[in-house]
Length: 95
Figure 1: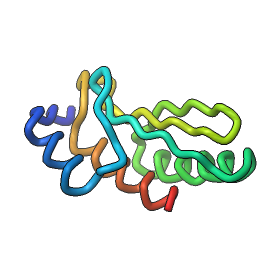
Figure 2: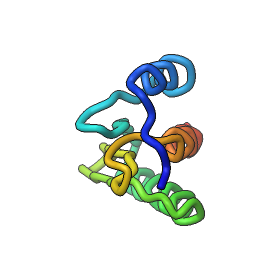
Figure 3: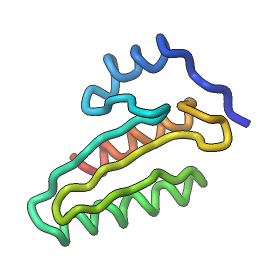
Figure 4: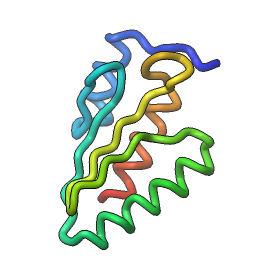
């Protein structure tokens, strides 16, 4: 099982690499607004493929053109390096 990151490690990662993310309830959270509903669905499909290739899956909430990603390592009970990697992939997909 992956090791949980400390609050300092998480804060540094957000500050240095993931400025669009916040921490809420032991997870990294980012909301993305897309121009259209179908653009949002395409983003979700891209993230789903990335997540499947990593065998590490985010929680995804779709509200019309607003997509919210919650990334955490459920079995570890919080945020691990795997979550930072997936968050960076989501940022790339959303760019």
